[in-house]
Image (tube, rainbow, N blue to C red; front, top):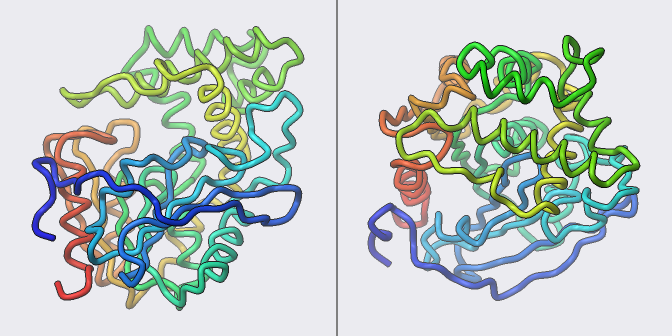
Length: 323
């Protein structure tokens, strides 16, 4: 197939294989395969944590040259149990569990090595997976670079109040006054597990409104989370606050500290200049410490949108067979 559509995206395709994989701890993850059965394997790691995979992710890869694997991380999307369940137990939902799930899926599908793509939180997960299993990764394509550090969480939940003071005060005031000077992710997490469904729903709405606010600086930004259905909002907010209140289950600075494990793996890092919620310095530091990585800075976009899709497909095209 030739070049993708006008924004760089390939035409929509449907999966030709799908299923549920039991990964232990009572969890099953939904997975699907699209594209060419004999193509180069590529796994896509969605953001959030908790957004679930999207059919649009399939179109980031040439379907004639890639075997595209999507899956919903634990308790998100079609995976079970859902984080939206009032009695959902998230204790077996950590970065280490997700890394093990990716490996279990690779083995289940009979794949030896694959390209790993991730966006936003999916970048943090991709880095953690690749550092744990570098021999299984052919290349990395990482968009809207994150590293899971507490510094980044504090930037979003507290420091961004300097950029959006009115919206941040509404976000902060969504938790009890005694908790407003503490860990806001943890405080919201408690509200999201309250016994009262109205308390849970209001906390999810406020969290999603704030997420859309701090990702809105690019001229073409549009609401995404704040206009989603309540079940999605609750799933997303519960998982994000769970991970953020636990520092993404990583040591501070861990992914940058262990970047030497990725040396020799080609990588393209893609980041928007307007991504105020995820400042460019994270991508810059990773690129500087990672020989062989390429940093692509997009001057027309923030956390998503703009020329982001075209930059991603340009990278996957570069690593496709016969390129």
